[in-house]
Each structure stands twice: as structure tokens, then as C-alpha cells.
Image (cartoon, rainbow, N blue to C red; front, top):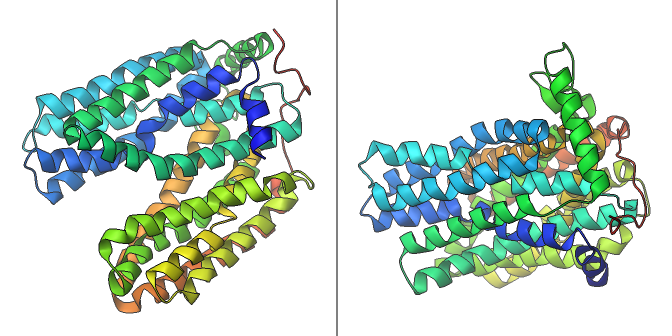
Length: 419
């Protein structure tokens, strides 16, 4: 599997896109935490810090579908350049020109969230349009899932290292600027000529159809597709157990070990998912994805049951590593299905809705886990997570027929290096 990743990511027209996309996504997985640390460093309390972080998330949730729609209408370059400049500027002002009691800080938090460069959705949409063989496209989405795990594990370490040599404010500024530079680099990296021509034609069709009733470019955009709606529902349901366990893990460690080791236990979860992608990724192209996906969700549900056996923080780390093995595979299958179900004119928006569905599911799980952790205890929340995951698996099996109704982008094997 590592060799397959290397062959894909070093191909002409792909190496630059993949590299800049990694840089542009650095802020995605740590900015909320960094904002909390900055507000606390400025002298604000946890309620104020939580409000700033929450408003950043609200801005991201409200703005990202609109930003993604602009990408599909006018192209990735214009939007990535605009957000790549606006995003770091808003955060620099938030950090260095406002304080916890300043209303401008709240406004800038919303603006920064709304201006987050749509690197995730852009790159995943590009994987669907690049001229790749289907096994290469599956490898690309598996890489996306693996990259998510690596960033979740690695970016907090990066933030800690930056703070060790400076302040939280300087660390946030550095990450924001890096993200903006990555977005600009991703915008300016050339695409294969056939993809550029296809994107131009798709954008023109999308603009022409924008005002027509029932057109893909209407108010609902890609949400017109019943199969995609069903997939988003399953994705949200599958994220609920993640949110539940996010609350249960620190509660368990607090009760059975030392709270300061929670981060190491969390890391086991991500490591297990990454190892699962590398170890089992080669088996993921033998059956059509719409048939494979429900079984992967069922395997994920089985994995959520493993932490029920934990009796100490060490055994919980092992349980999370073993049970987390299917997570990246589920994520890769979800991305493959989004790319095949969505209209090619609306791919960026479709991938944005997919990300929001996951965020919504995790938020519901976290809120529910917080309410249940006291009366049920960690093992009780783990049990609820298993039940939620099984319900997601039932939904995945029920939606198999809808997931098979794809509008797949034609692939040209071996053509990614042309032009």
C-alpha cells in the first residue's frame, strides 16, 4: 500500500496538488483548539474562549457550502486565492488587534471560519475528476482518509512544538499563514489540460442552469440526489459513535488512570485507523464500493464494541487501536461514493456537505456523550456508541440500492501524466 501511495502522489500534475493540499489543510484540525489557547493567553475565561471557538465553527458551517458552490461556479483558483488571503488576515487581526472583551473578536471568528480555504473539498473533488484508473482513484481516497488520521495525530504535536518556542498567539499566526500559503499554492498549481477543459465546461453549464427549476445548480445543489442524501445520513449516523467515544475516552482515563495521558490514548485510536488503511487497503477494490460500504460500516460497529473489554488505560489504548482499524476504510468508501453519486458540476459542494454531515454527527455524539457520561459511566457510553454504530450499519445496508445509482466520472487509465 505505501508503494501505491508513492506511485500515485509522485505522478506529474499530482505531486504539486497533493503537497500543497497538505499544507493548506494544517489549520483544519487544530484551529478551534488554538483559538481557545489564544483567548486564555489573552486573559479571557473558558466561557469566552469557548464562545470564540464555537463562533469560528458556526462561521465554517454556514460559509463552507457557499464557498464550495462558488468553486463549482467560477473555478477553484479564484476562490482559493481569495480565501487563502482572507483567512490568515482575519486570524491575524483576531489575535493581535482584539481581546476577549472586544466584540470585533467574535465577528472575526465568524469571518475566519467562513473564509477557511476549501482545500479538503477541492482536493477530493479533483480526485474524482483527474484521469485515473478506478483502482488509482480508490487509492487516492484511501490516501485522503489516511491523511486525515495523520493530521489529527500530528497537528496538535505541531501546535505544541510551536508554542514551546513562542506563544499561543504566534503559533496560531504561523499555522494560519501556512494554511493561506498552501491554499494559494494549490490554486496556482496547474491541472492536466483535459481536467481544466472539463472544469471550464462544467462551470459554464452550471451557470447556465443556475436559475432553472430542478437544475443541479438550484437551491439544494447536489442535495437533489436521493442517493447522496441517503449517504449523508449514513455518514452523519456513523459519526455519532465517534463523538460519543470522544467523551467516553477521557472519562475512562480519568477514572482508571491519569488524565494527562488522554492524548496518548487518543493517538492509539488514530494509529489503529492508519494501520488499518495501510494493512487492509489492498483488499478494497475487489468488490463494487456500494456493496463493500455497508460491510465496512458493520466492521466499524464491531470495532466500537472492543473498548467495552478495556479495564485500564493501556487496555483501552490497545482496544482503540484494534477497533479503529476500519475507520479510514469507511471514510475512503464514503468519499468514493460521494465522487460517484454527485453531479460532476457540483463535486466541491457535495464533498463539503459530506464533511458537514460528519461534523454534525460528531457534535451530536459529543453532546449526547457529555449528558450520558455521568449517569452511565464510560462503559455505558461505549455501549451506546455500539448501538449507534449498528443503526448506521442498518442504514448503510438499506441504502445499497440508492448508492449503486451513480453518475461516475469517466476514467482514463494511466492518463494522469499527460499534457
